[in-house]
Amino acid sequence: MKIMVVGGGGREHAIIKALKKSEKCEKIWALPGNGGIAQDAECVGIGATDIPAIVEFAKNNPVDFAVVAPDDPLVLGCVDELEKLGIPCFGPRANAAIIEGSKVFSKNMMKEFGIPTARYEVFDDMEKALAYLEDAPIPTVIKADGLALGKGVIIAETRDDAKAAVRSMMEDKVFGESGSRVVIEEFLTGPEVSVLSFTDGKTVVPMVSSMDHKRALDGDKGLNTGGMGTIAPNPYYTKDVADECMEKIFLPTMNAMNKLGRTFKGCLYFGLMITENGPKVIEYNCRFGDPETQVVLPLLESDLLEIMQAVAEERLSEVEVKFADRSACCVVLASNGYPKKYDKGFEITIGQLADNADFYIAGAKLENGKLLTNGGRVLNVVASADTLREAIDDAYKASKNITFENAYCRSDIGQRALLALNK
Ligand code: AMP
Ligand code: GLY
Image (tube, rainbow, N blue to C red):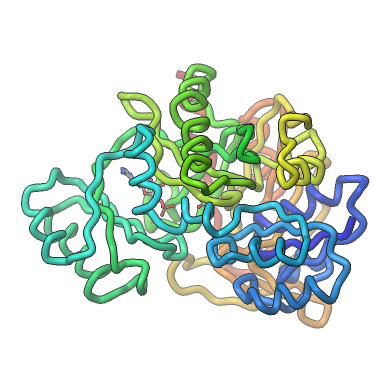
């Protein structure tokens, strides 16, 4: 089969490497891919949000199957357009991708169908939002309604910070039109768990759970980033928690989307917080998480392409989705200074890695045969092993064999999970 993968980061590299393991996979195009993905797929210079160009490419090439990985093209209806050409796709249509594309939609859906989440209010009038904040409980959480490159959430520790956040979104439009409506919600506490799932609207099959590390610096300090590392499985996601999530969150979400005429097919990501009152939904994503995918897919023993096809054809219940009973750790090597200012253009040298380790390139370009850094998060180093401790040690060992000037990584990925395991 000839497969088109839309996207160009570490997540897409992990998806492409997993698809290549399938006997049925003959060829992969990546739109746009990146300098590192070019080793595993043919990169085509079409941006992931350029829907007309993606459609044109699909018309002119023998594409048998498409995987649309990032949020923006999904929300913009990339799958709808490709399906019109008769190309089977992995990924939700626009009317289902709204589960990530609008926080107001997803919060209202959860309220209507009794899916546990933080209490909230929606505002499209700034003065009303500011008035509400006069006696809202603090800390509080302010969220821009629409997509904001993963940055539309502000946790305000004081009333003044909360008001400033509302003004920045609604008046200064720091997140563009995404901030015309805001959700103000209850601040929850507890460990966070990411659960990616396959769903075809009839069945929902959770993948192995994972834990993201969003802050830039060790000890969960510093600015929020797109994710500095991940581990799987997440020790807070016990069998009991998993059962409760299936009953109160996963199945009700799938059923709610069906009832609303918005059947979700693809990877549905549940961002959960395990609170004193049970698991609650912090956010939904309409796609594979980044960098969760980079620890989840290396543990997948079944054929990813077969699963994705089964999702597209609504026969997910017929295929096996099996994960290894092992652990994995992903360390993100970033450019020093990320998520603020950083320099680019340094050569990346990749040495020999052990059999249980691999790498995915997130932000790099090829120039005269050299791989050069070209983004904040440059690459992901992943190792899997029988225990989490070994996976962490092996991922850090492997990271020593990949070098570029100005590289930075957190040194404590997985330590919180180890503490939880040893409690
Ligand atoms: P993101 O939506 O990925 O930018 O992530 C926002 C992050 O903010 C989450 O991973 C949580 O750590 C945090 N967060 C979001 N909503 C809440 C909430 N209601 N209570 C506490 N923390 C939250
Ligand atoms: N790692 C969180 C996300 O993909 O949004």
